[in-house]
Length: 152
Image (cartoon, helix red, strand yellow):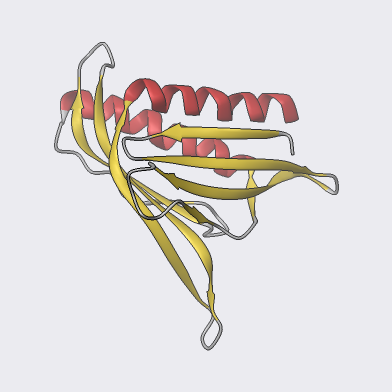
C-alpha cells in the first residue's frame, strides 16, 4: 500500500487505501471505506477494490475546491453528484456556510459501491451524509494532489 488518505467529516471518515498498479501508470487500485464514529452501531462500510484514474483524482479535488469557492457567495448551493469513472463512489457536496476567508462547513454525501446485484448487474451503494469543515476538505485535497505529484 502506498498511502491512506482521509476526509474527516462530523460522524464519519471517508478513507482511501491506495495502491499503485505496476502495469498501469494512469490508475490506482483503491479500497474506500466509510468509518463511522464509535457512537453508532455500525463500524465500517467498505467498497470492493476499484480502479481510480489520475483524472478522477484531479477531478475530485477540483469538484470539492470549486464547491467551497461557490459556497462563499451562495450558501444554498448543492453541487451535482461527482462519480468516479468506474462508478465505485459518488460524492455530493451540499449547502453550507463558508466565510470569504474559507472558514466554515458544508454538507457532504458519500456513497460507496459495495458490490453488484447478481441478477441484473446493478451497482449497490451504501453511504453517509454529514457536515464537513473546509480545513478538513483542504487537507484531503492537498493529500490527493500529492498522490498525483508523486506518480507523475
